Image 1: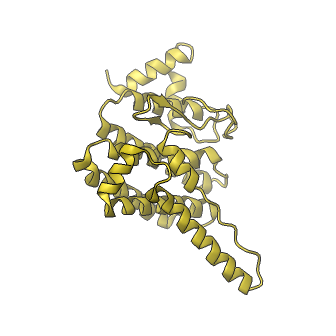
Image 2: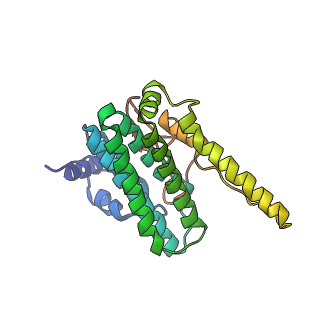
Length: 246
């Protein structure tokens, strides 16, 4: 029996003995009632996958799904819920963390794989228009590419930090420094033009460190034995205040 069929049966039992709801949820968008079931399906699939390389591939596939959902909502004139961005961020971070668990000799090809997949998504987004929604998504992806490029430039340091904890490390805090520099430049430029300073939202600095330690939403945090996710209110597509497993 295939993995997906197994997942559908598991979800069917959890949802009252029918797999129809589980199958229908696979096309749900973040604003749909069945979207939490879709995320739960992904969680179960991730948990049932024992190979680290396969888990990394799944994390990238789920991240690409989040990007597709964001673009589709944008095309329908809808604002993606905050939880979608959190899921996207966490799934890319999950892939990065998994790359460090594949052994030091496999770190570089794994990071290159992640970088190339993200860059492919950026290219696909070139023809999808502009606006704050896509700008935020592109910025998030570009920051992850920068983080990976930093790791590729210092593989030994990147691997060592992953093995000894990511807290307060130069590599993980680099994004915050870059974001502060951009904010200062924008403020200086806008002040010179007698305009109000542009607000630069830091989507990454704190969450990158938290995600690497499994303290925020997303798929299973390997190595910790726990899983966390960004919950949604049923049918609203709006993140709730309390955490829980997908």
